[in-house]
Image (cartoon, rainbow, N blue to C red; front, top):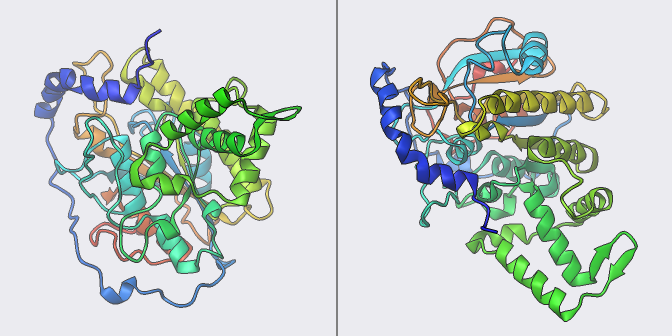
Length: 429
């Protein structure tokens, strides 16, 4: 049997075949002038800690950032309240408990790419940096400026916010995004990294644990044969073939080991029992809230990306699956004394989608057209943190304003974000 095709690499290699059709859409569009985003150097004093490490204030909220990933258009999400495929997000979170910014955009620049890895980096860092990878068809990007996780943990100290309370929940087929956890920025970096929960991390845990203690079974530990040991060592080396950033992957903790022990005891290791796709991300998030108690949680939903081929309904159904997952997470928050009335939800797509009627599936996203840059932001939570407003805010705002917005909510500075972008002040009470 031939090896399975990685769907993202297939898309990248085949993107050129759609470029001509995409160009028809581009030529018909009237572009808005670029938004006024400007880079500026930070005040050196702003890079110094604001004071000694301190506990995270009880007056500050927990934040759950939901990357409405895979690329979604406004048309199927927030444009029509009667036809939205995410009714919980629109009617419950926005209409009853928060605010909608319906004119958030990705900057109209050739270097700003409407894709998942880049869009996630823009959200994490608050800058439209040009990200390139030295390897062909690989998107293992490294941030040049701190992520909001680094800002948070440096402000309050690693002891007060340990790595397992600054979490990214990641999809199983986006291994490149496993290493968006820390930047190469001086004064920040791996010391203040976030932690990823994913099936990829679970697999590495299982291999290391089996090599250290023997093969795990429901009945107890079984010693490895020489052949099994060689096989597992080879599998682990393959997973760890990640260059310098494998040090992040290797940095385990008792809390994470206990988390994955529980997961293995409940779901086993076959992969046939646990949920898959975005339902897996929902389940991991629910477990994280229960067992790891994060202060800042980013959930990288992704299933709408399947729309590049096949039935168009895959796309709208994937939006509905994300909506169901957000509802489950919201209900879990409301049932928890620590999180209830103390949690802010931020929902922002990684990118939009094209609107090209010349394509069999008219809503791709790899061609940087205008509608692929048109996204939105929804914030919901207690009124002492988030404005409640049933009228959509139509002012043109930038996607990269999310980083400074989280900083404003959680009380940490973001000195290296783009000076012209944000925060999204309309959100904050």
